Length: 207
Image (cartoon, rainbow, N blue to C red; front, side):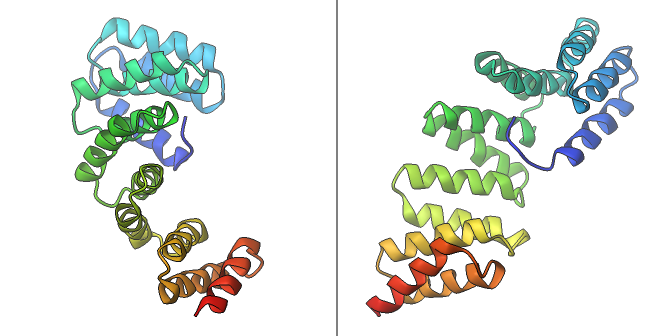
C-alpha cells in the first residue's frame, strides 16, 4: 500500500462501514480491525466473508486491494481496486492506489489517467498531486510536474521534498532565480539539507 494518511483512511473505512445496514457490515469491520493490526490473513478471511454476503461492497473491494497490495500481490490488488472503482467511480482513494500500482509497473499513461480522475473528484488531494508530479518527471514534462508540485503545496506548503524537486527542475531549465528561491525555501525548512545546499551554491555561481 502507498503510504499516506493511513489512520484517517481506516477511520473513513470504519465510518462508511457503520453506515451500511446490510449483514456484510460485521465481517467488514472485523477485516478493518484486523488489517489495522497487521493481521492480514484474518483480514482477508473477514473481507472475503463480507463480499460473499454483498458482492458490490465497494469499500470491501478497496480493503481487499490494500491487503493484496501489502502482500505484494500486485495483480490481485489492481483487480480489487478496479472493482471498487467500477462500483463507485468517484472513489478517489481507490483511484490513487490503482494509479500508484500502475506507476510502479511503469504504466504511466494509465497511472496518470487514474490520478487525474482522483484529483478531479478531490482537488486538494495532495498525495495524488505529488504522484502526478513524479509521473510527469518520468515523462520529461517539467511544466506539468511543476504545476502538480504547486498544487500539492497549496494545502501543505511546508514540505521540503516537493520544494527540492521544484528547485531541481528550475535549475535544469536554467531558471536561476526561481531555482534559488526554491532551494532557499527548502533550507528554511531543513537547514542541513545537503542536496539543497549544493544546489544553491551551484545556482548562485551561475547567476
